[in-house]
Image 1 (spheres, helix red, strand yellow):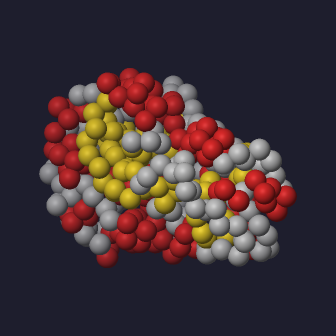
Image 2 (cartoon, rainbow, N blue to C red; image 1 turned 30 degrees about the vertical axis):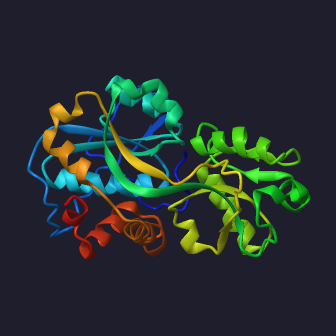
Length: 303
């Protein structure tokens, strides 16, 4: 996933990462200090920890949250952005990455877990209400996935998707489309950035558009959207967001692994954090997370 064009500040890195991993772009800006005066409540430690992420909003903010917490506790943190999920899981399973904070289970990333799971550690679940969606602006007079094909012309024969390798894309392509006989619309994939840009433009012009999306996501706070009903449950039930690590991470960083295992954010906390970053700070991730930490205790998230 490519970086969102509205983001003014990228996730920081504490060190320059190797370009050897395919499918990733590395942030090479110097990391900013953690939010001033914040007591993260983590044991002091040392060593380098590499966090991989896809530029999905919950992954972006969670990664920066933990970067600040770990660096304030003495660790050197490198973050690596991947454009595709597959290479990230490969890097995690090979030990080139230490942690991934945004594993959606048991559906979205299950195929990757089937391939790489025996070489990973699952450290815990930090949100239990994640869901895949297909959404339209509230002003669009279509309410169900079962109505899409009959209204293909309204949407120009297009479903605006995200990355081709995303579990969401796989679910829509292999389950939703055949189940509802959606033969007159094509799922077009590119990036989440491109999808959000098209969504923003369509809503500004009050034009119809149908997009693949997920919750929690800040778009639901910014726009008046409705999820198309999925009576056949082709997108699955609510999922959990999990922390995955390379084999041996818990032995090498026992205190960090313990804190990650206890990490939890409610839907409200996550939505508030995303809103602070993407709305109040216009996508400046470092500044937005730092501001959120001034009003919210990190130690409560790992209690």
